[in-house]
Image (tube, rainbow, N blue to C red; front, side, top):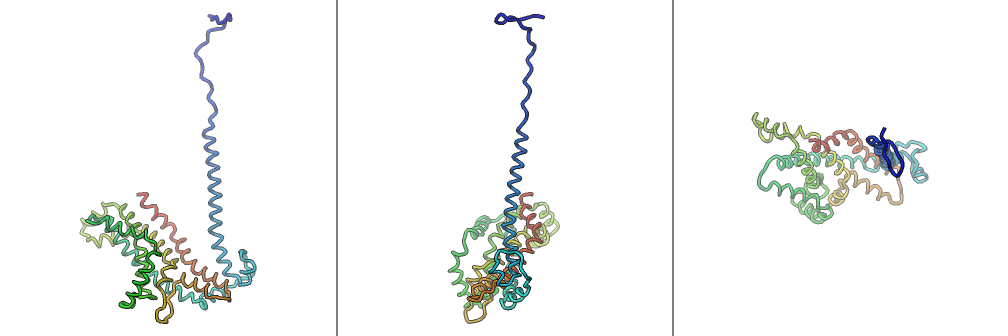
Length: 318
């Protein structure tokens, strides 16, 4: 064996050097720990958010089953000593919630139907047809989203009262007038939402229908509108929720001008119910009225929540 001399010392010749052993991989382990920490924080956040959302709803419902003395003595308690179902009948009858519900349903039936019909027709024409002024009209509709309704309060108030002198059905305290105002208020967002949805629909189906002899109106109502069902359900739920909870416009426009009873909607009636109590508090009846006003929209959203989610994500998926 040959030797090599270095500094007076001899050692055997070394062969090819071997690489050092790899250090333990800690990157994947750290990533896993980080993922667990993130999941833990996200679950805690979702739990806190669920409590913040569910507790007020449950508190309102359970307070509607208490007596007035229980509401004052233990306001945060969720377990009533006795279930007082008569609170709902008192709120429905003495609180005139039945009339409020009827007025609200009449207004929403007309306004949501017209908003969906006119909004989808306008959005379809702007999304599928090219003509001069297309983008200008579209951006004019979008400009309605930037205008706070409070800035239009004075001209809207004067316009409704002046129009009512000529056309009584479009005057103050009229259902038809409030329907028209709701449609104008909701049309901008409906067109914006449905415009994006109609642009995602395939052109081949429309072209095949036109080749088969379908007119433009038949193409829209028989082919394109059924294909946009998820988007229609989503924007329909948004319009129902927004118009059901609308308070400012009914308070501004549903005013009695000649001494006739006011045609109040549910949100307007609940406010007056709480204000008109004076020194006689009926907190249990008020909570019962809030519960009855809250449950319909809550049930509608729970029933159609999958359609709402699919409608919101359909444009992205395509």
